[in-house]
Length: 65
Image (tube, helix red, strand yellow):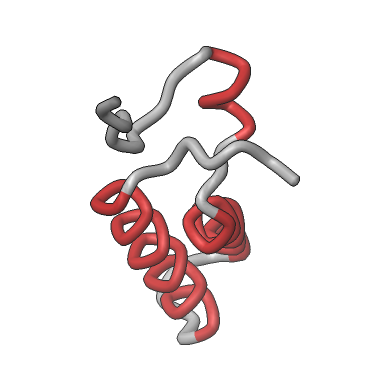
């Protein structure tokens, strides 16, 4: 459906940061703004970032022919 534009390390970092923010929110350590962690979690899980698409960026390795 969407073009994959989030590479391996970027993907792992997004998932870790997203889970950390959500976990801290659920634990009451940070406020409700921590739910913003859903965004990096979703973009990491789906391997696509709408902002990267708009900017024409990609962290995926290029395929060599």
